[in-house]
Image 1 (tube, helix red, strand yellow):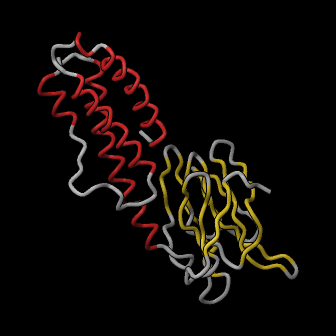
Image 2: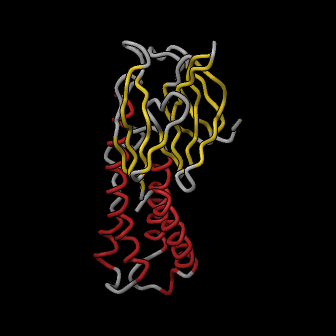
Length: 231
């Protein structure tokens, strides 16, 4: 289950929890206070997954409503089953998110992760080579075995968000040399550019509807663009 599917599942359960809160006196195995507590924990899950920081979760804060459900709710209760599944799915997603964000912190345009699995897409860089000696790496991109090349090659590191890959493209035209940010839609494999040409595009993060990046290897200059600022 990916993050988008997980959040959709939470929203379905939240609707059912709200119904139970409104009619809490009909349930002998729970009470209004417990239901509100569970609802708050569901929102904590969403906030955690939407956060860009790997350190944002409160120390000691754990999602543990499955214990409440298993201890007191009927075994065949559908909402209870969903809650137990959600906790298991959340713990799995949280582990994967922490690992991917930690990798991003250590990546540079000269040394970055080359293989990925994004939902149903296997993505990997091929034939990476330096633009110049000691310069950023660029190469082609393989998506489920289909090879893509754009301009002089794709750089890194890349970012994945909402079924799209955000990736630097190396451009060398006449007197123009540099990198431009591209978005690759994995659903139809279309490529569009965002923003103009920079000396370097060193991707940092996606936050809200904006993408943040550095324009030098030392991270001294940071810029950001709207995800919808396509040219």
